[in-house]
Amino acid sequence: MQLGLEYISSFGAALYHSDAFRALLVLTMVVAWVQSTKEGELSAIKTLFRKGLYWLDSIVYMVFSKDTKGLGVKYQIPGSSTDPEHVRSGGTGFQGAAHKRVVFIRHGESDWNSIFNKGKNPMLLVRLVLAWVQEWLMVFSLQSPFLDSPLNDEGIQQAVELRAFLEGDHAMDSEKQKEVLATIRGEVGSSVLVSSPLRRAISTLTLAVWPRMQRRAEKIELLSYAQEISRNVDTCALSGVKGVPELPFSRIASHCAGVGPANYDASLNLGNKSLKSTGKMRIEAFNKWLFESPADTIIVGGHSLWFKHFFNLCLPFSIEHRAKTDKMTNSGVIVFDIYRSAGGKAVCIDPDSIDVVYGGFTKK
Image (cartoon, rainbow, N blue to C red):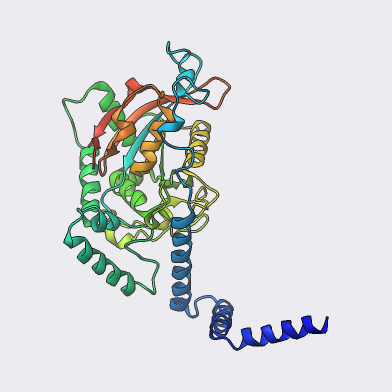
C-alpha cells in the first residue's frame, strides 16, 4: 500500500514538472480567464479560441467521419425493400401517393473550389499558399477560405446571372418551364425557400431570389438536413444552433441592398453536423420534413454531392440518369416531382419529371 502511494506521488510529481503538463495547465487557466470575462471584452481573443475549436472540430470530423455510410451503388439493389420503385405501384403510376415538387439550386464557385478545382498543376501550390496567408490574416475573425468556404467573386457572378435568367422573359419556354420560373419568383403556387446552413449555398440562393424576398418580405429557412455530404473541412458549418453565419454579407451587399441576419429563419439550423450524423440520415430527415411542409414546392439551395446522393437514393434503382452520376453545374437549377407512398415513408422521384431549368449537369 505504501509503495503504491509512493509510486503515485512520484508519478504525480514528475507529471507536474513536465513541460507538457505545465503548458496544458497554463492553457486551461487562460481559457477559463477568457471565458469568465464580460460580454464584449476580449472579443478578438474569444474569436481566436472559437476559430481554433472550429478547426479542431473540422479536422476530427475529416479523420473520423462516416458521412457516406449507407450510400453508394452497392446499396442500390433493384427490387430490394429499399427500392423507390415500390412507390410507383409496380411501375404503373403513383396512385394514392402524396406529391411535392422540388427545385434544386446548386451553389456557385467557392473559395475552396478556386483553390482545389482549377486543375492539378504547379499553380495549385501557389493558390494553396496564398489561401493559407489569407487564413492567417483572418485569424481573429470567423472568416475562412477553407472552413464553410464562402462564394468567391466568380460564384457571386454566377448567382447574379442566374437571377437575371429567373427574372427574365423566355418566349420559347414550355408551359411547364414558365410555371416553374413563376413559382421560383413567387408569383404562382405555394412555395418555400430553404438552404443548407453552409455559407456558399445561402449566398447563392439569396442572390438568385433576392427580388422575390424583397417583394414578399420572405425569409430563407436554414435547414441542417441539406448540409453537404463529405468529410472535407469546407462542409463543416461555422454557424451554431439556430445561428445565421456571416456569409460574409459584405461580398453580396452590392447585389442585395440591406441584406443581413434578419433575412433568414435559423430555427431549423441544428448546428454543425456531428460524427453521429450521416448524409443518408440527413436526406431521410429532409424527406420527412419535405412532406410535412404545407408548401407544394420546395426550393432548395444546396450542394452537388448532396443532390447527387439524393437522386441515387430516391430514383428507382434500375433507372439510369445523369442526375445519379454527374454533378449539377454551378448555380444550376433542376426541377422534379417526388412522391411518398400512401401511409408510408418510402419516396420516389418520377424520372420523367426531371427537367433542367438552368445550367444542367457536368462531369467536372
